[in-house]
Length: 278
Image 1 (tube, rainbow, N blue to C red):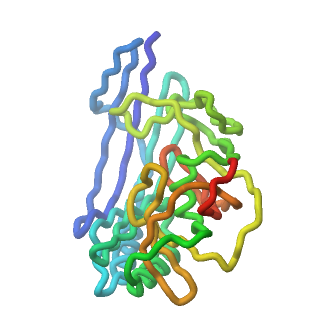
Image 2: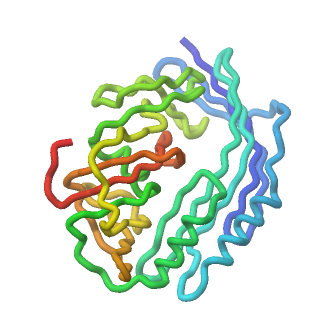
């Protein structure tokens, strides 16, 4: 059986000091174990992303990063994308911000899928006040964007939220996430063979949050094996710490979607230092 997937994209992105405009189209052909890709010249009508909005968003982000902080990486983008797989066609208009703010030797890593900058302001303000490394608190509450990054890596009750199309144009249905193979396929690029993945992960609420617990307000490194490195705000102190992932005492979901893997909704999680069944 042969399956052909095509993708057309038009994007505007701010990378550092440069505003980049890209029009690109390509196709992937699967024939059993053979997977081939190529650029295509076929053109279709696509919406034009707003370069002024992208540029203004990038400038506003830079304006909030004051010394002693520095921007190590700044990527702001808006795109119009069309997909076709066999007889199914669909479109999307994604926005992304990928940002690394450094106060050497620590840096906050931020990935969001909208141009809402309030969380970035809070992280920048806290990073300026960051002190020396400390031991992790016994209980720590993860801000929703930190929890979203961790959600695909932990075993808690969660489910796949419904969506319109996966990498083959098939519907994404509400599904309880288990250790079984995911029913849908994720295709981050036409150049990469699709892989099975859980889409739009959402935690099922349980337990009781401690509103007075210290809060992990930013990731300081990619998710590690059995631990996360975060910027922690505790009363009037802000400090970097490495938190072992031993148990989740409580969880709450938000309605904000984050671009981790095939997508995850915000997840406020209460981590504890003792092992819990999850």
